[in-house]
View (cartoon, rainbow, N blue to C red):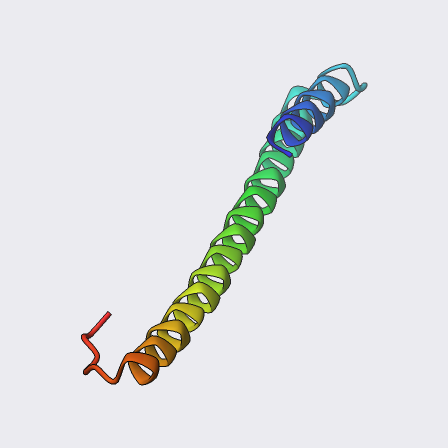
Length: 81
């Protein structure tokens, strides 16, 4: 996904540089596109963080259920995980 975003950014940048616009318009357009690309990257990072949190939470819940089941099976007191 990183290489796709990098290629997209390079392609957009080159397209803007070779477009028939004034220097000020080109700089403004590049700034706007760079901001959009940065926003997209932040969104991807946030999605990744959410997936990690969800996965860790699910694993933690399974571990707690497993520990509880093992405790009941052995009749021992539990320790904090």
